[in-house]
Length: 212
Image 1 (tube, rainbow, N blue to C red):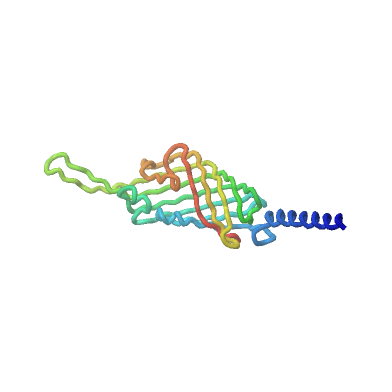
Image 2 (cartoon, rainbow, N blue to C red):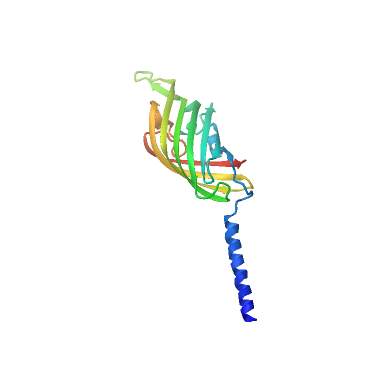
């Protein structure tokens, strides 16, 4: 009798243990994996832009991701907080190949992604020319500042489900940034979120994605 009770308890505990492991490894909502995702980046609004991305699964744990952004702001977005900028316009295009730790519809997931990025921006900058002879007047002059940079590097990211098929996507990384045209990369640089300067730079991203 005691042996039967002990055997029953052992089987019950084994079943619970197996159930817990299985539950942890189950996908979020569906039996099938998500094939594609639409990405949105709300931080782009702070620098006067709009960004949208598209991600498509290539295998169960890998995907190709491309993001495009367009910037157009009479107040020059965050640049206007740095200095006397106005009438900003620009464009960026980034491609990533993501390697996920788990299949692509888990509640929590991390990824490593090599990236290639191209971006260009221009804005009007208000300068003052001062006369060194009496009556020492100053004249306002508007100059066009511009910068174009390409970059290559890696991003380490985390994705977490906040609704059934809506995810929060965070990433941080960096790489080599190479100016290719323009003379104002330092002035137009926004550290971490929109780097333009030459050399090794950190880079961060934040956004939401909708799984389809």
